[in-house]
Image 1 (cartoon, rainbow, N blue to C red):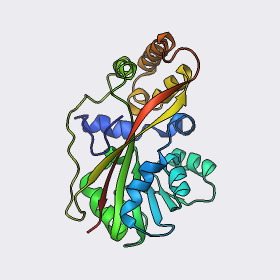
Image 2: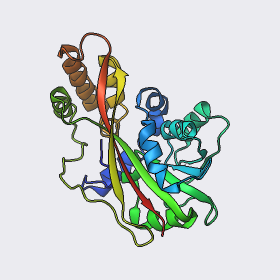
Image 3: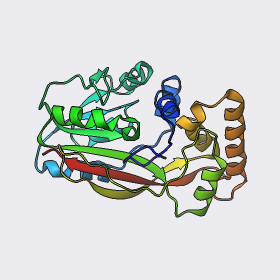
Image 4: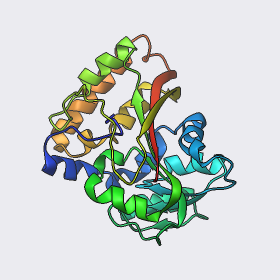
Length: 259
């Protein structure tokens, strides 16, 4: 997974293709992608203090993976998502919540209108020079911007090997860049990490990786080869080849308060 603080792929055209690749796989995205731990969501909202039922934008909401956790945390959610297929899938899972056509660079809400803007798995796709002022515009003073990203646990040997097996020509190169973003409209960002897991089978995890953008933008032939390689690896491993197992995950969260 890409770190929430930025994109390090180096190819703007590839980044744009990957960012817009999810719509045709919206149903699989909803089915296979992991949720976010409630502790991570509560930490993201912590600077709001005692605000009861805060009004929160799920920005780049996709199919509503983060929205489910926000609702569980007591938030009133407004989803903003640019892809029509993803919005349709969102509406299937959250029919009572608004899902607006918009993006991080053009949020269809008034100034100073929400308590928090949370982003799940989409922050690295944003044009941050345009997105930061737009997010600050819709946030009330003292409001929170937070981005959450689920990633595999790199301390687990088979997970590290799976990353190598799952590589495609569209994969972003690895990076040690761990810098936090910064913008004058926000206080300095903070980071926290939360361990959790997702119940999987070898076939389910193969399908999950099939919803990752680096497998969605490649040719059908390369996609079949990459997913076949993943399936073969997972079925052969003792940790993953015998029915259900727990996929170890780390949810990385960054947050900052609007000045």
